Amino acid sequence: MKILNATKIKKIILKKNKLKIICLTAYSKNIAEILDNFTDIILIGDSLGSVLYNYNSTRDVSINTMIEHSRSARLGIKKSLMVVDMPYKTYRNKNEALKNARKIIKLTKCDAVKLEGGRSIIKIVEHLTKNNVHVMGHLGILPQSVKGKFVIKGKKISERKKIFNDAKLLESKGVFSIVLECIETSLAKQITKSLKIPTIGIGSSIYCDGQVLVTDDLLGINETKVKFVKKFGSIKKNIKNAIQKYKYEVINKKFPTKKYSY
Ligand code: KIV
Image 1 (cartoon, helix red, strand yellow):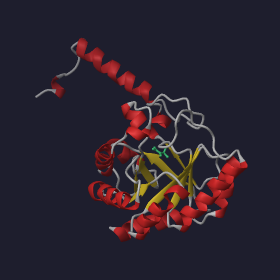
Image 2: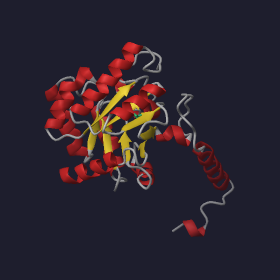
Image 3: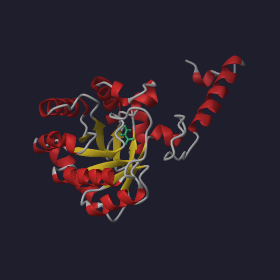
């Protein structure tokens, strides 16, 4: 299993400077199954807290909720690398992180986990990678730490330096890729150029090695007005049309006909 994961990860790293890396979120089997035909990485993101449960923050997502959604998504994922977010307060120290990462991997059969942060969690990241846990990093806006409004990262010189150094540090401790969330364009470009591992951008410009979006946002199922979300579909309209037709046929006794009855 570990060798299989390492091969998948190697293939993703080899795409750097050649082909863009496609990453999307999935919280369940049916969506994961569709995505798997197109993606390199499927992320079971703790964004499910706001998208599915209306939580104000991803801090309210529990490890059990992440595990249940991941188990469902796993059923639809055959070829993409499956990454699961470690939720808030599940990696406060090295031992807690390793215990919880192993639990997530064991119960969900995911290939890797994602943790938010740089220098402040570097010992934890190092402990995980040394213990053969594949880790994806996450810099820029860190939803598990944000209080209040989300603001673009990397405008101030001191902040730019910190994010850049965090990226280099994460790479040196063995993460296979880093999500850059809402990082100013020239900084995202600079980080991407100076790392050997791929960067996956969300609101961080075209210069990243790959892109990720929340699938419910791009499909137009989840209502959001965030700048970096482009709606590539309006699935809500299609769902409404189908439900309206169903209601009409039930009311007018057109469904179920003989064909749909035993
Ligand atoms: O939780 C999530 O879905 C994420 C992505 C948006 C990067 O972390």
